[in-house]
Length: 78
Image (cartoon, rainbow, N blue to C red; front, side):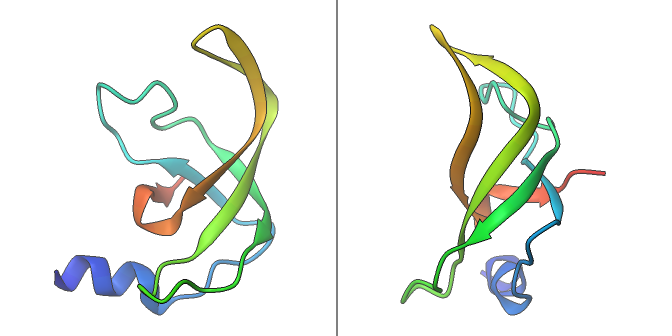
């Protein structure tokens, strides 16, 4: 619970490089993307951000260049 609170403490900023947390079952894990939009904070305290990938990423039967994600799902994407 403490870790979750820390994720919410810092407000994400446009231009940050983030990636989905490393999970073997998550096809987008550890692929860096740039934050292009920060949505208003949810009641839970979590932020929703829009990520943009440098090149299209194959996800299931399509290619994506942008995806929305909660900060609690993300980690720094060096």
